Length: 180
Image (tube, rainbow, N blue to C red; front, side, top):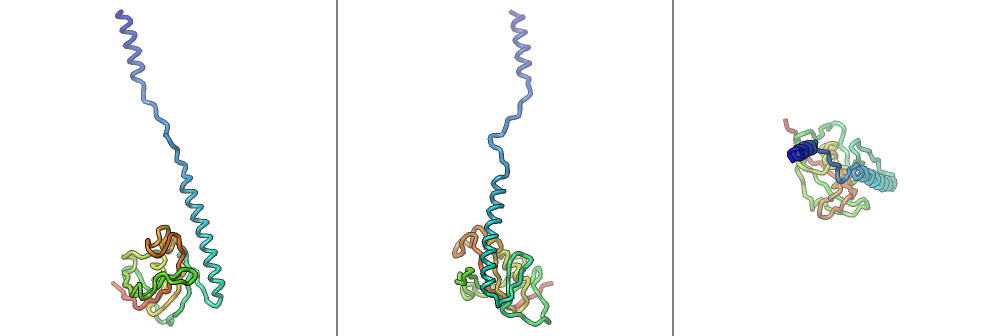
């Protein structure tokens, strides 16, 4: 009987001291969601770019400039070359703007949006307009065409601008106040 208890105790110790085995994951994430999202966004951008290029072809009398930041614009009013001051980090820009659909229908008018003061790169503003304000000088007016990712993106403005909506903005810079 003692032998049986001893053998049973040894077997129990050997089996009980086994190292734990790693469990396999229940689900495997392969990154397919991110890959699918990237592909959707590339297709959306290509569609928006085609719409914008069609709009630019319709306005063939206008000289569109392609920005390095991923949007297009043209000057409605361009000041002389002597005025070379553009907004830099921390400068206060006083401006007016409106927001339109690509077909020209007004979403927000200049009177509705009123005159704005923006401290360059220190306040929230959608990406395209922030970059556009850096291009303009005091007294200039330009019309910008922003694809949705440079405008209000996936969420829109949660009011009048829907998801993934490319927009046009006519922006007038009234004054640039430089800071030290």
